[in-house]
Image (cartoon, rainbow, N blue to C red; front, side, top):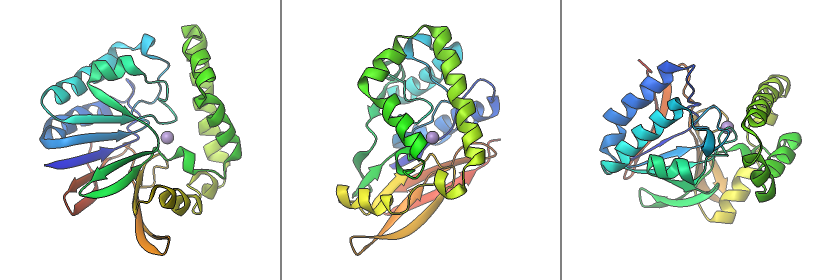
Length: 241
Ligand code: MN
């Protein structure tokens, strides 16, 4: 039985091609898997479990069907959908994972992250992230009127797009010294994350040992998944059609 890992689908009603491809992925691949890990930015935007749209509810139902048929589903927050809460996870039959999380994959301890917390050179974003993720801010955000949350979400998205265009490319990528530091701190030789939309397998050294950082790809012109079958790990793209 294989394990599948995906991230950065940025699901939204405006991209029916990605939604269709995801539903197809569930029916053809995830259904045969023992577990499906979704490492953040599953939805393009999430303003709270009390504001689930019919579109988002249909995705929850598709996940629920999969979990009812025996595939365990694990979901981690991304920077776009960090307001996903218990209500959605109950509806979708999935377990919310902390970022970072240590799991066993293919007989190996592996660190899973969304990846935005690795981009430490982007100090403005790190400050914003610290503010957005502290329990008091989360409480305030979740209790703002819906219209205010919609406006705020739109502002954050525009700001993030604008800044990504302006910032040097090494700032929006992970900080290379941060990677071995966090891997050594968790005692792992494999790290899997998404967020940067730069799918690759990077070899590196952690505490003098060979290690690897696997970056999942976003779903846009094609889809990406990492499939783990015991010792056989394959990161590969596929067509959305
Ligand atoms: Mn992200």
